[in-house]
Amino acid sequence: TQLLEQSPQFLSIQEGENLTVYCNSSSVFSSLQWYRQEPGEGPVLLVTVVTGGEVKKLKRLTFQFGDARKDSSLHITAAQPGDTGLYLCAGGGADSGYALNFGKGTSLLVTP
Amino acid sequence: NAGVTQTPKFRILKIGQSMTLQCAQDMNHNYMYWYRQDPGMGLKLIYYSVGAGITDKGEVPNGYNVSRSTTEDFPLRLELAAPSQTSVYFCASRPGTEASPLHFGNGTRLTVT
Image 1 (cartoon, each protein chain N blue to C red):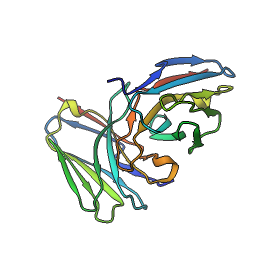
Image 2: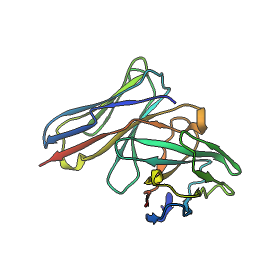
Image 3: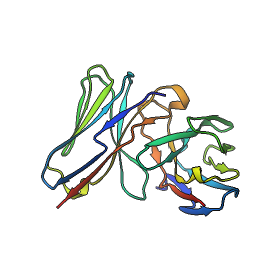
């Protein structure tokens, strides 16, 4: 199993602050995905990064894939209460029917 | 668009009882998965299927069984429920290409007492 370590595990910030969530592994991934999960629902895909060094932006969210394709980060600018949720990074390969291995997640709370 | 549908949403079982968690998808995806999610532990793969008639074990298969008789349905069976199986169970599917998104159902919250 390719392990993915996420940090921090919990983050509580005020509206308007910036934050970064990290996802690290000793394994090389051909792609990494970030998901967001709200209470009572399944995770929903935010982004897929496939190229080392790649940067993708989704409104106030910026995702980066490390040059060696072993790590990724999610940066949120000017966080809003609607950003509250569990953020999960995931990666995998052709093993196990293209199943994804997930990090333990970062639980983000943004208060007004 | 229904996507991935899981039933039931909630269930309480007594130790030793059995039940089947239902999962159906209407996207014609070949690849389907069962994960369990425990607080602070992320998602762990229980079983997966790469197509009708083909299933295999994931990381934590003990105490569970699956079947895949059609492309659409992928039920998860719990035999002799134990407290350690208290968890939230998610079914997911994807088209099968490596960078394709995983589509999740909304989960079944199971409590075994």
